[in-house]
Amino acid sequence: MARVNEEVEFASGVVAKYRRHANGQGFVSAGARVHPGAFVSGTAYVESGAEVGADTWIGPGSWIDHGAIVGTKVFIGQNVHVGADSRIGNGARLGSHSRIGRAASIPGSARLDRDTRVPEQTVVRRAA
Figure (cartoon, rainbow, N blue to C red):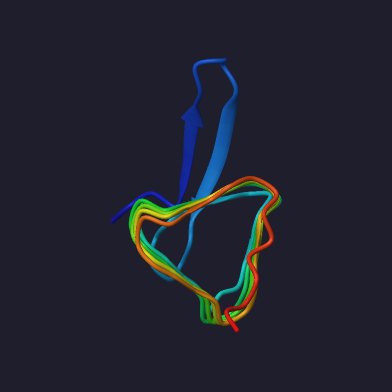
């Protein structure tokens, strides 16, 4: 049985505290809000200030950074980094190994292929 609470010490000496999310056992910061119906894979992290909506799936090795807001019914593949203060709209799909820059915005129902790079502060537009 995995421990419910974990602590991680960074090189700077700062200690971050995480709890295991009941659905998937991923690491969720005490300062994050993750809907109970979201799935957070056991090797994924959700940092403080982040919010994750209902029916969202966060894959193994993915990292939702500080202050990011992830909507409902979002699919986040394996090893995806969602940058700090980014916004991911409802129903979006982010392919594995994608990198979403700080303060970027992905609209609802958007589909990003695997290995997609979205620069900081970019607003992705819907395809016409």
